[in-house]
Image 1 (cartoon, rainbow, N blue to C red):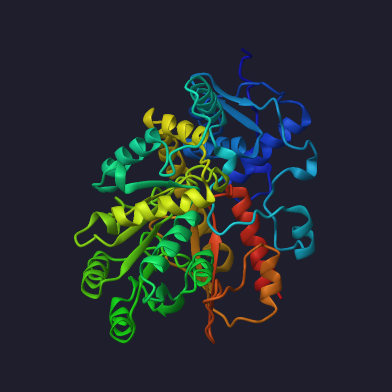
Image 2: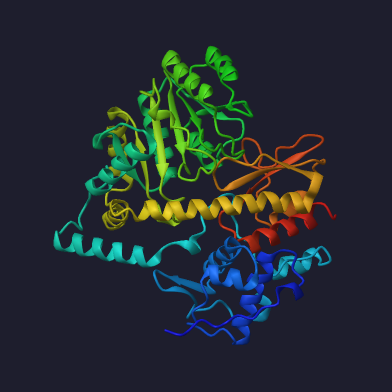
Length: 479
């Protein structure tokens, strides 16, 4: 193993405004120049921090971000190394802090913008663990000759692992019979809508929050439901307004994202949660609880899901592991009463008879060995740091022109711009892959004096967050 190269850096001579950017850019330039060769082991974060006279956490953050970008690789119990498989070795690929003197054209051409409104950073997936788990799963299904049609409710091993997780982490007391594995939360939403449409043909209305998740709304419409919107405020779904709706309409279900409301990121207060459950019992409607990123709550212990609280008999709880790793993983689950689960199984036989035994067994192994919990804990720390950095960056760049209520969790910010919205902003936002509107409301909640956008931070390194915010500033406020 090579001895660490004694990095002699003069960060004060660099033009970047933050120590983080100075160090990150300097390391990349040393790699590009050949002074730091592929496979070279770097000093530990404490050693390098002492040598440079900076905070150790800054060094750790730089190492983590450069690992995410592919420049470095971390090896357990060995240290941090320059990767053997580097990104495109061109000087212009070096991430630098963009300045307001650059034009929006320059920024657009030099900075690739990741399309997201709150997705995980797939660069941080523990691929070696995944590879091992998939290899074990493939051996198991081959030796045990279970490559045929699987259980439409999901393999027993994964449901058992989910049962343990839901009990220990989510306060949900349920049984294996009440859990159904699905290909992501969207499939769970579709199955819930389809089952409710068949079981309650006389109830043709689903209530959604004033601003809601567009694919869910489209799913309800495709199953011939009518949509009514309930107002939102700083405490989440407005139950007083919901009462007005319930007194005038026969409702099949209320669809809600209570933990981190989509798109506003608000967490529904406990009194609202209890009131919603009470109304469900009184007016006999289902609650479709979309708990899409429960794992990522930063400031305190997560509020228990609706299904774990009293009067939760008619809650259809939908969760996903896609936010832990990557959307393409397509592993989700539904927890509901037996009538709902049995009906879902029948529909699954029509659309997904084969199932995905290999993926389910691999995920079950990772859950049983505690790897998913360890990865989640690591990601929670990184995403919280990125959330805080994104909030500070917006405030530093936009100053009094923005207002952000720091979300308690999730992967995105709900950013208020305190100036009138102009129609030409829509085209500008497309350059950042921020959708400007959708069917029932808008990612841009417009008033005469302000507008909002949803800004995903989890999939972006601190360098990328800085570049995106600077580009947003130039596209919106320098016009």
